[in-house]
Amino acid sequence: MDRTWECRSHLAGVDWTILKDDLGRDNFDNGRTADELRLSFERSHATVTVWCDRRVVGTARVLSDGVCNAYIVDVWTQSSYRRQGIGTAMVRALLETVPGQHVALLTDKRSDLYSSLGFVGDDGGMSLVAGSWLNRAARASSTARSSGHPRPSLHARP
Ligand SMILES: CC(C)(COP(=O)(O)OP(=O)(O)OC[C@H]1O[C@@H](n2cnc3c(N)ncnc32)[C@H](O)[C@@H]1OP(=O)(O)O)[C@@H](O)C(=O)NCCC(=O)NCCS
Image (cartoon, rainbow, N blue to C red; front, side, top):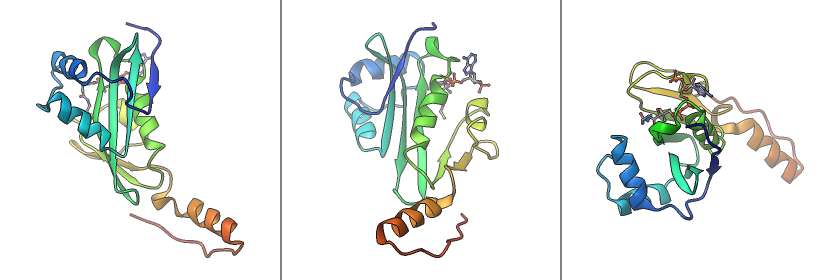
């Protein structure tokens, strides 16, 4: 099914019962109630839903401490919408919300989706640093700009 879809970063309008049913039809329901599903998303650092014809056809979310570690979960594209770039668009949108952080995810199978975005790892675990580790160079220069004083360069490594 190759139809126009749209990524949203907010959760307004999501019908969690319908979403749970759709996840179940794709064997991707991990047992959360519709309410638990909603809470999982609402309590995440950032979420993406993909919409087509007023229905959610893709989800992804990221947990983050806001400093150095993030974890992507619930990446799902409804089966009839797969292989159109929806999964890639969702993960890319989440990565933009966690600059400088080490981003992990667990996946059953190696996928070009993740490696094309820069994830590396062995079977069962892949991760990357979104941009540069801890985003210090950008943060230091913005602090220096706001204080008017130059900052020493910081060397960051995981
Ligand atoms: C994994 C999943 C989210 C991918 O969603 P998707 O929307 O199909 O993702 P994309 O379209 O961005 O990429 C999927 C594949 O299609 C390819 N692709 C992307 N755009 C494409 C296009 N326009 N035409 C053809 N193929 C395309 C990608 O290279 C990728 O190839 P791969 O399977 O070898 O990695 C989806 O298969 C899914 O929901 N699976 C079940 C749940 C699950 O396993 N989630 C992952 C948990 S980490």
